[in-house]
Image (tube, rainbow, N blue to C red; front, side, top):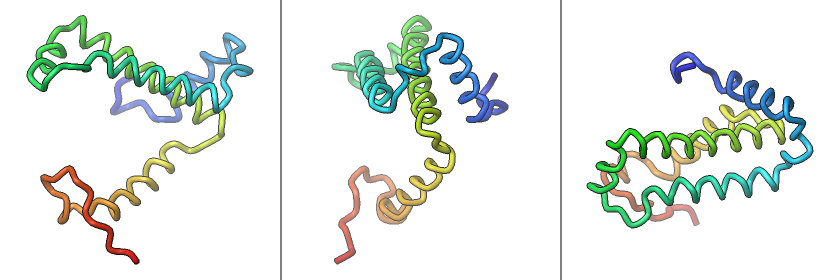
Length: 123
């Protein structure tokens, strides 16, 4: 199931099956899933904490470390998909809508090469 052939719907369905097979729906409530996301993000961050860019690149060149990082990313995605299922959201629609908002918030011609947000122009 590579990225270029797997849909978000496929991933959501796989996650829903995993949860249902274990009868975990009663635990997969929005609050719990959001908290679990935060925990998993923290576990991902631990792999990079205190490393500079060169050390990060070197760590990711180690297949064992890379797999650990990818496992944490997969855990994050699993809880995000579960949250999406729990609140009956359409993640693709939400993502595209937010990306459009960010296009306005961070106009490419004003932020290209600069991480800072441009000054607000509305009253």
